[in-house]
Image (tube, rainbow, N blue to C red; front, side, top):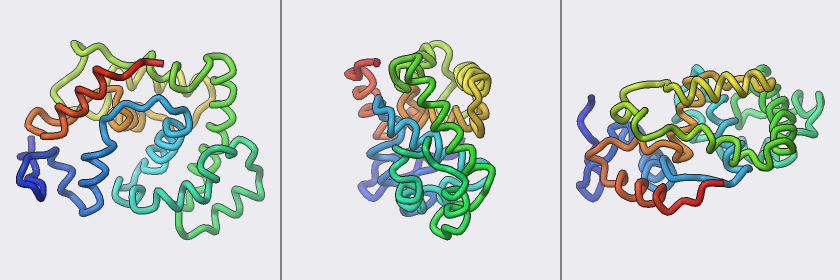
Amino acid sequence: MTAPFPGPDGRPRCPWSGGAPEFLAYHDAEWGFPVADDRRLFDKLSLEGFQSGLSWRTILAKQENFRAAFAGFSAVARFGDNDVERLLKDAGIVRHRGKIEAVVNNARRAEELIEREGSLAAYVWRYEPDAGELPSPQTVSTSPASVALSKDLRKRGWKFVGPTTVYAFLQAMGLINDHVKECVIRAGAHAAREAFVRP
């Protein structure tokens, strides 16, 4: 395991948070804190799908462009072929036809899922792993929970939701607290999870 990163305040953080200037704010304020908002969950799962084969820095730097291009990820289910072609010309995002079409497809699948399950959050949080199932933080790239959620999403017709992508989603959205033990943010993420009302 790499040594913790000493932040600007001198306190230790997860090693990856020092990998690029834009990582620190994301690490300290968002990563690992629980989320129950359907739009934010879909937004994040979409961005994680775009990251497949790329660096998170690339996606993080373009995340506002993605949100603008995909109308805040709120009306994507109604996108058609013309929208896909428009997005393929948008230099502000990752112009990968398969990933763009996957987001449109997944938005439609999300609407079906919400109709059956009540909310995307209620469905996703059923896959929160028990504390006893978790390995040491940041030592794996998949887990039984990410494999199970990935398998079920793919059975429901979702795309670009492999176990590694889903594990990164679980980490980011606070379904697990994967801040390393020494990280100063770990306690805050833990407190947020303790106070969080599961949907």
